[in-house]
Image 1: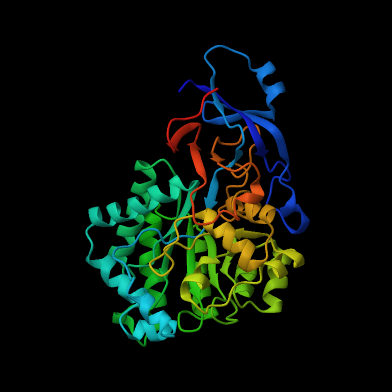
Image 2: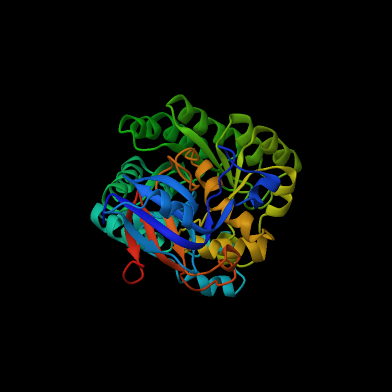
Length: 423
């Protein structure tokens, strides 16, 4: 491919041009669509956007590669800001238990849950961990994800947590996707610390976190602030230790109960609070005042069967900026942000425009990357997806199929369904 590429004749060029920050309330519905649009890509960045006729007049030079997107939506690459893509093994046996009405805690008692995956991940070699995770990541790329957050948290000891984070770094080096690493050693209390959560918190804060920082293995630190995991004081200890080491903060908050996670995220200035199925009114208002991103994970209650879906409609109306993510993990094996957008519309009552904003510019903001990716504007990185629908509103409607026909990362086509379309 030549250094300059023009993707032209998009039925909708979804630019999302607007404020250079996360979008809230009515802003989430403004996609800044250009009909019969074109985008010019040069040296890995977006050089220009506009109507195809105007773009071709201004950039009518030899040596320019032209790709025809007639009848298709061209939009920013999807950003997945909450995943547990790196793990070993699987837990498909849990589906039968869910169908019998077993709860999350009962499944754990039956040998499933996080601790089952901890055992499988600890037993896997570094190469096995890489290969299993890379297969999932390639599928995510083919569904349009060009930037992905990846958490540790299935090691729950220093050596395996570091192995997971090194695997995340290697995945980002070897696959055509940007991966933002998050340390989540405080995901659960491992069996060797059973009944001693405070001791485990000290171990994470005083031993594991400094080792992570020495190798510069994580951009963010996350903690599971929830009854049965870590309370707000324990969560604060871990997060403050991470903040002192220069990491950004995230919080698994209020998934099963109003646990104070939303309040903690606002108190500490976290970039996001994630899950938010049962936040308190005070927590939501605190997040709105502090502009803390609420990351919605509709795949999780879908996979858990009987879980509570977050009230995205309420959060948006109050003014909390909302992002979407797959929450890919062994309990919620969701590799598609397209499916996540569909769930957001059908289960969270988000509009297609809001779901698209939540999967691009707001998802980028949940990773601190909104100034680099998430919109199609001059100077932004050329992370672009072509969808085989004429309108963005069809993306959540056509669930159960991969609508991507082309995925571009940093100006290079990294996946296509068949040859790239040319005029």
